[in-house]
Length: 413
Image 1 (cartoon, rainbow, N blue to C red):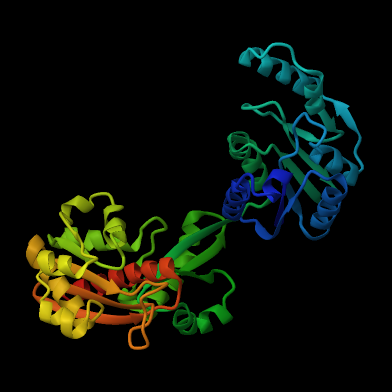
Image 2: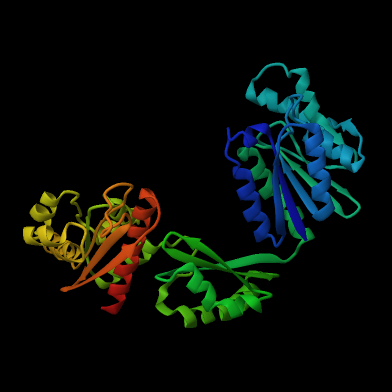
C-alpha cells in the first residue's frame, strides 16, 4: 500500500520551524511496510490545501496530514479533509469532555469558545484520543481511501502514532520493511554503484539503494517480509554477496556504527594507541575520534600544529624539510606522523597538512591539495589528495580520508 504525507502550516513553509514530523512519519511508515512516493508542505490556505488533499488521494491509498487541527481560524485541516470526503462535522461529546478535563488538569481556567472547534469531527470518523493536548486525531475511510489527521506538535503526534496509528496501519499492511545498512569506505560512489550494477538491475526483494556520504558509501539493503526472521533469510544472501565484492572495505552493517567507532574498536581489540597531528583540519580529526565512547582508552593526546614553528617544536619536523618541500608536502606529512607517534608514545598516528582554501593556493599547490600521513608501528604511509570543495568540505573530506587510511593500515598490520 502507498502512503503520502502532507504537513500543514505556513510556519513550515517560511522555515520558522523544522519539519521533523515528516522524517519521523517516513521512517515509521517504511518500517510498517508502506511505500511513500510523495510528500508535500502546504500553508494555512483552504484552496491550496484542498488541491493538495485531492491530488494525494488520487495517487495514494493512505494520506497522513499533520498540523492544522488547532482552535484558531487558520486551522483548516479537518474542515478541508471532511469537505473532500463529503462528510459533515458534528460535535463529539467524548472529545468535548476530554477537552474540559484537559483544561481542568492544566488548571487553565475556563475553556475559551474557540476550543470547542476541536470537538467537531467528521461523520463516521474514528476519533483518536490525544493524551498530551486538546486536538484529537482522526481516521476517515471512504471508497478504499484513508485519511489520517494528526496534530502538529511532536510531543502529541508521536505518542498518538505509536499507540493508535501504527497498530491500525499494521493491520492494513501486515508485511513490514527490514533493512541492513552496509557501510563502505575507501571506494567512491560511482565505483561502488558500478560494482553492484547487476544486482540493482535484477533486484526485486530485497532491494539495494546507495547513499553517498562524505568519504563513504552506504548501501541500504531492504526486504519486505512478514516478520524479522523471514526478512533475515532474504537479507543474508545479499549482504554476503556484498562482502564478497567489497571485502574489508565494508566496516560495518550496523546502522549506528560510525567509521571512527569501527577504528576505535580495532585499536582497543589490539591494545594499540593512536595520536593525531593536524594542520589544515585544526582538530576536526581528533574530534571525530573523541566522539566515540571509550576513545580515551586508545587516544591520550594529540597536536594542532598550524604554524611551521609548532611542527618543528612539537613534532620534530626538520627545518630543512619545511624549507625545501614546504609545509604542504609528502615529506612534511611523513615527519609529522612519525614525530607525533614519538612524542605521544603512541603505536599509531595520523597527520594532515594541506591547503583548505579559499586562499593560499598556487599553480603548483592548489587549494584542496592535502597530504595525509599514517604511522603504524614503525611504518609510515603518505597519500596525496586533491579535493575540489569549499574550505569546510575540503577539511571534512581530509578527515574522512585520514580515518580510512588509518583503518586500511591497521588491517594490513
